Length: 266
Image (cartoon, rainbow, N blue to C red):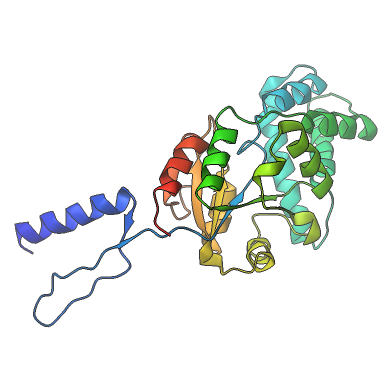
């Protein structure tokens, strides 16, 4: 391969990383180096995860930590235990409200650390912790920017319908969204691929016309493996799963994601 050809291919790779994608390489009989580039198209619908993606969980973590006798070091274990048992529940063909699974996980983590938390108390802690959460500072401006540019915005969460309704009312986010989708209606938690398929069908679009915006690597991985597009918000402590495909957008906050999206052509 000639040096000029190597340089050309390298430059194409750089353009791809900056928001241009290559749908295919077309080799003509007269010029094998002819490559057609296509700008990244706008997704038809933007689906948003809610907790941590839109809402700041600092307040919730403080309340859960208090229930664990101030053991802030147990918060990550509690959250991963909650996710683990949401998957166990769905894989077993069962369904339970995400908040109840969170409460059960709180009891389990407490029991393993000699902290006795009764079921009623655990559920009260989780329900109260999830209520009244504020939006991250940049969220409202970013959502308004996307709405102004004609995007359809849909929340897509593992939380219950009533729970998200209350959260949005408290955080002042209700009017930004065209639809609210909860997996409660489908009965299987993200990141099962059937759940993303259901979300796309519910909105009447193909999987590749949907883009998930989330601050969870597991959620983005599930969406991408289902054929959705993805935009990752790398909030503090959030990481992409290295073995999953990479999303086309990876920014530190929703405003930066919105800036990328509004620049796309319809």
